Length: 135
Image 1: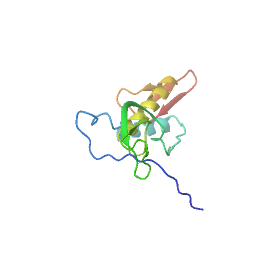
Image 2 (image 1 turned 90 degrees about the vertical axis):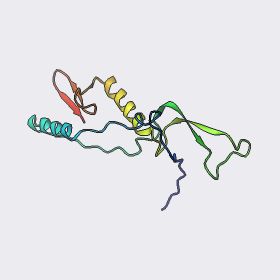
Image 3 (image 1 turned 180 degrees about the vertical axis):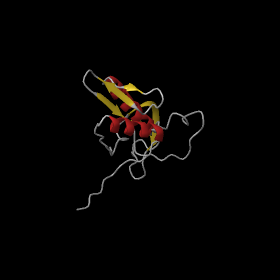
Image 4 (image 1 turned 135 degrees about the vertical axis):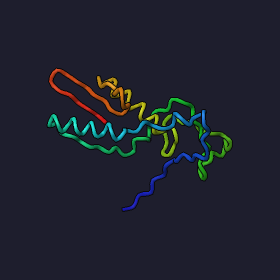
């Protein structure tokens, strides 16, 4: 069974340095941090779980105002020149990865994880009986 789903996709034709150039990319884990993470877990005989999250960029709240033109074929006949203000991220939106990282960072800090000093993608939470690491 085939299903055709209509989705809005952001088209980015340019990106200007100094405007949204630096804030559009999320930090990426350094290979050294991943090696330390795995070595630490192995030395403590801790299990490692790997998880991929699909559709993470969709429905993330945006901090900045982003406007998109009406998609071809779906132009409002009463307001053909109007644009849409995005409240949440769309697929291929340059700010989507950074918005997702900020959401994930907020969630981890709210749940007593501390961000690594060397690598901003390594998080640790220690309790009296356990230690959790996320990279």
